[in-house]
Length: 204
Image 1 (cartoon, one colour):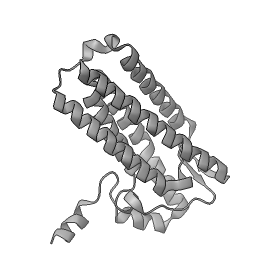
Image 2 (cartoon, rainbow, N blue to C red; image 1 turned 60 degrees about the vertical axis):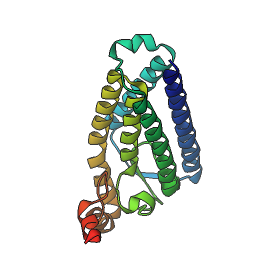
Image 3 (cartoon, helix red, strand yellow; image 1 turned 135 degrees about the horizontal axis):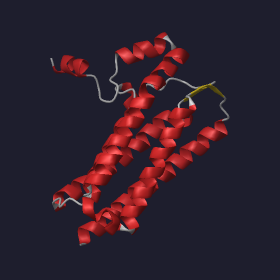
Image 4 (cartoon, helix red, strand yellow; image 1 turned 120 degrees about the vertical axis):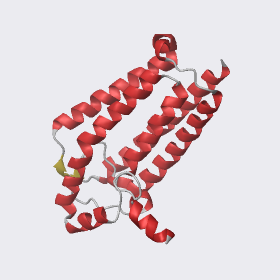
């Protein structure tokens, strides 16, 4: 069916561009020569590596051997695939903005570098972890594009576990590094979405 082919093309395009984006910014970060002063424990990075490997494996399985996952296929309407394409595009554009805001402060692992600065512009003006929010949006897009409940559910569950393992530790590390500056920043921003209270104040 044509919608299956289009969905696969969108998936491949979005993930390819995302991978290129990450590679470009990781290269910039490496060239900056920053020295790590605080780093997460290995158990977090091990889980992240396992989860990424699982996603890559199931992604290629869906693309090149869809019959292996056909038992979990869901008969979604065409409009849901179109919605998935739009969400995937928005997520990609969001990632570009986030990476531009982070610049050379980007890191795959939880680590604080010697010359790292606290980024509070772009999406970081309202949300402390827009990267995680963008990943959720991307994973919801994957659910619609693949029309496969097994991929959708396991990817979202894996992402949730990853974030739960990382976000508290990440904020503790940033508090250790930036102290009152980060505490104040936490008070005026939301973790994954903009804070509701300030929005209500603006409406009034």
